[in-house]
Amino acid sequence: MKSDWDDAPEYLRNRKKPSPWRFLAFLGLGSAVISALALTFGKPIALDVNQIKQGIHIDGKPWFNQEPEQPMQPVSQPSVASYEAPAAEPTPVPQQRPLTQEEIDWFAERTAEAVQSRQTSFNDDNYTPKQPASIYTPPAAHRIAAATPSTSAPRSRSVSREHTSKWIKGWNGGIDYLAEWVSVNNYIDGTSVCANHRRGSIDYRECRKAAKQHFHEQCRAWRARFDSDRKDHSDRMKTRYCGAASSFNPMG
Image (tube, rainbow, N blue to C red; front, side, top):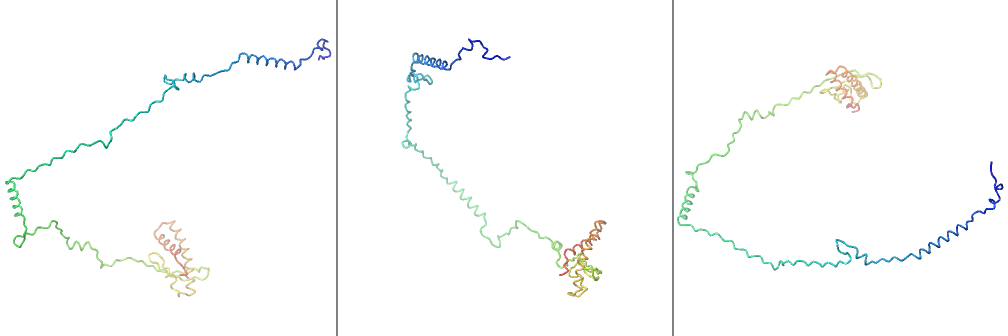
């Protein structure tokens, strides 16, 4: 159940609400009281700078009353020009004892003996030749001949030649050609390929083209055979035909 203000007693409804002017009046009164107290008890603060200076001490002495130190006078040193070095004492010269007559005669005799013992003149009667200091003995003649290689003997170099004649297929599938060539030290001589035909003719050119193709086929065949049997003959044939397949020029 809610109460309504109209249901309140008469004396409560007639009570006035507090006014904001009352708060402002109290605030102004308090400010006036504080200002009066400040003017009554407040005094200006005066600082005596001289007393502060006299109160600062460093090492037991007042800092601001110290007298300036007197500059130190440099100690006078004697001038270098006025210094005189002591005179050097002269070094005594050793006195040589004079030779006696006996010593002079002894030196003269020894000098004469040395001159007489040394041979200064030579002739056929008094000259004796000396042996040489080093003696070289040449080697015997047969040793020199054995060590020297003979230039007259010809140097023999073995050259193996192998002639081959074979029917080969035409390079464009045409007729077969009889091709001949010479292998020198297991390498086919390119100038000898198809030399059995007249040089410059059509058969000669076609034969050389067919030979180039034949060398490639033989290279592949002998390489595969050598990989399977690992024999020396297969290795030689592979080297021969593979070398010709890479170096032979049919138009040459």
